[in-house]
Length: 415
Ligand code: ZN
Image 1 (cartoon, rainbow, N blue to C red):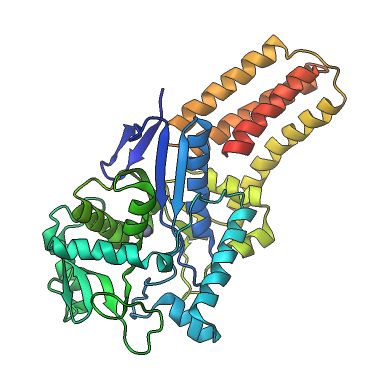
Image 2 (cartoon, protein in one colour; image 1 turned 90 degrees about the vertical axis):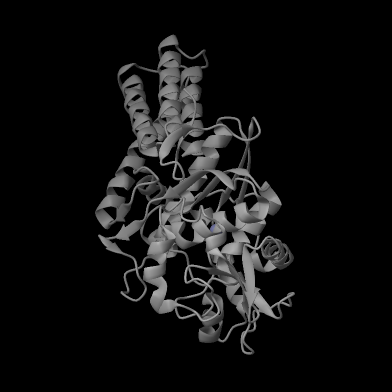
């Protein structure tokens, strides 16, 4: 068996073959840092944490890049999320960005999510974004109008290949929102002219302005991972327009495949309802961590396949907590016994059992990172360990150490 990944682009499970043997370059769309992260973000980033941990467990040399969006992610009203928050709190935009970027990393640390190798910020990569836009204009994939630059969707026939949307549909849907300076309603902004009061602004060949949201991911992934890289991840909510636009910009500018495998996490509802600030039903990661152990939240998230939608409720997290406690009980029992065990080699019986468990775990995870299946294997390990210790009498130090090591490896390092 080898690792297989469900590729959203081809809509099927494919054998994972990295571009360079032994090496995986992965990019995951990161947060827009204008507020505290919610439990939907926790699902996405815990899921990719496990993806990256498992790839490393398999021996791959992984380079994990996840951006921080600190400019250009606009609300439907046309306001920049960060500028709006800055106005509301009488803070400087970069104060807002620092506050919530730090809070994001604090939350991720608390959830046991290992930090990406590089967390590039959009505002720190303006020259790279401008260079990419210039290339797109030169190749007639983009045009300038009144100080803004737009990507011409008609110039890239494959637009829609990830999300399955077709441009004619977009035309109907977008007609109400047609902007005067776009040639086609589906065209999207690469660079926006800054109005006089807009203080997040940079000089550019087209006048003072700021980058559109999508271009940062194309420019920064190319810079750190290359024009073509192995895996692109994110939440399903961003498949359109964000991910679709990333593909169009990158493939049009470079004339090369962008990401080879697309992995998207399913959405998260709270008590059966989509989280929405206007409805007042949101839960931040900080709120969740105030109520439950991080291990219970992680266990809850990993109890469903990453690509599936999940519903967050007290009962579901409670059940996950019980699942974690059962495993933790066996880990504690093993360690307690280990402290007073007589030295000795691991028994043949235990060695065979542990090898079989490890093999099953790999089999599950090789199947598109099947974490719920892997958790079930850890529960089976728990059952076997309890039986061995409770019914098999005192175990040797070697046996107990081997059990402890497997819990650490599969539970601690991977999940
Ligand atoms: Zn992105």
